[in-house]
Length: 138
Image 1 (cartoon, rainbow, N blue to C red):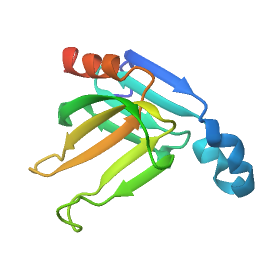
Image 2: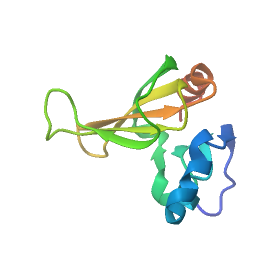
Image 3: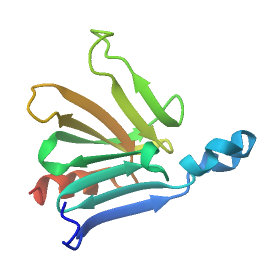
């Protein structure tokens, strides 16, 4: 995105993860997970936590598939990397999970390649996120 153009936000949500007070025990990483967000602009999808290193940003043109997930029960929170079930050395899926409940599964393609990576991220309204990503896709 050009620095001269004004960023148009199409959808946004932000919340404080329930586990953030537990991070006091590991104070140095607390600022990395202080807030959780999902933001969609006309050109970009962004989700994750407070820091650039705990946030995923992707150009919307690389989104191959989006699926809303409801009533998810995750086995942990934060950022998780899971190997694919069929090939340990394949592209690992990534989960940005702030709470149980709604989530979105998004499959991103890599520029100039047939490879894809699967991401899961928490969302207050997964159906709306998917509708926005598919209906206003640039």
